Image (cartoon, rainbow over all chains, first blue to last red; front, side, top):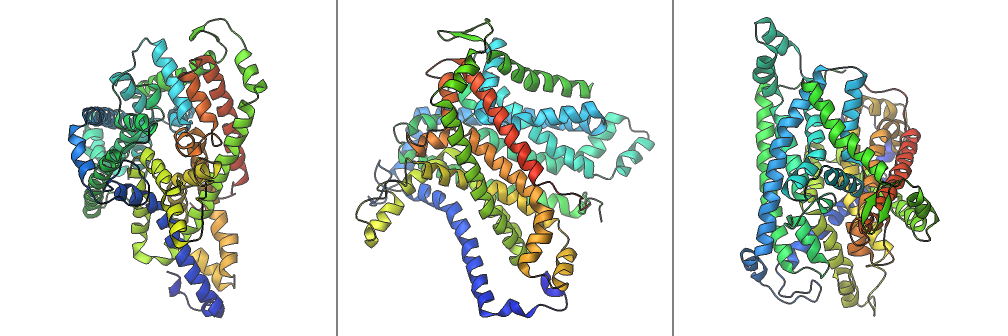
Length: 286
Length: 274
């Protein structure tokens, strides 16, 4: 982009500058190397023929992958995690969107305070949130289990959905909703038939994000689970003894599946946005 | 009606839990049950304990260091991606967040594989002949905690910085360059002032993650890397002293809140782009 303007200072092409550029590229690459080294390590050791995850390399095996279906504790934890995440995403999408509409249509100090307070659980350190929720649920007489875990996740999932949808609502052109109202549509018909389709990509993106948040959550969940463990809690309980590469195998599979899902979802979302051009990309500002 | 639902949500699931946490922190613990005898003993024991203030200090230092390190790495990387990668830069952002989809616990555990005595680094060093004995400071140390927390924080700082940098109009940079500013001065006087608030948000996110994480210290920190979070968790678990756990939580919230407020103050920029 900077190449378009007229006069470039000469010092940009000096040997020192070229060296500097090389160093910057190397540094930039190093960041990604740092980021992906652990992922590579996990994947590689999923195929290592030893229970000890250390070098030297003990030979190639697929036995860790074959062991997964036979591990009943692991499978039940995986299934439980899915049921938690699916329920949390479904409820959070509904409630979060509803709350976003409510906050969008209401201005003033109370609304602003409510929005601010709602986000508190997202930014509070995990174990503080976990302990405060454990105390609350105990005071309400709820036994730790499925309901408490889902409810606990909703506390940070709902504001994420609300914030994402709300920021999209605020960038919408209000004239479409106004036109619908002028043509006689009631407020709910307008919300559902006119406004909702315009924010569906935001809801989809929020659903994806909250799914990963819920599926992977350990710190808060630790305070809320009963006897049935979620997958991350199961992994956590295994790490005490140094878990087997079976966990690497599971994580490798989940990682691959979620990457495919991300690519598909990104495609869907971008395709969805382009033809209709719902959003004004500049946000209206100059 | 909708707005009432929002208020009810906030009251029941945000305000009430925090009030209850405050309330629990002044209760008396009797063999695992919280009894409604009000006391400040929990706070007294937090402050006068030999371990707690030390752990709090260590946790804050480690968390600030990790967040700072992550910012020093991720902010320039975001700037570099934006200015040098052309239309591939969205790919750079995507690749930055992909690791977040891999189990947090397992990513942390992977550092054990990398840093351990017979881990990737030590084995490589030995094979090359650079070391005779494994470098034992790599794992089960504050170094390991620092590295791992920096690692998990980088994507957050990168994304917040990137979105802010992306919004700076190129015309401002060209104006600065055409007026003879060196690349360094452009960054120092134009880019940084317009993006430091977002970098600070990334820094704060990283700080919150680091402060609240008890998994990383107990996985890679060993005894010397123990952090404040483990203390809170043990009050919920083994020690079974919820009131003390609540007091520890309140103290942490106050300290971290003050710290974040200071960060926000220091990086405030007058005026906005919009």
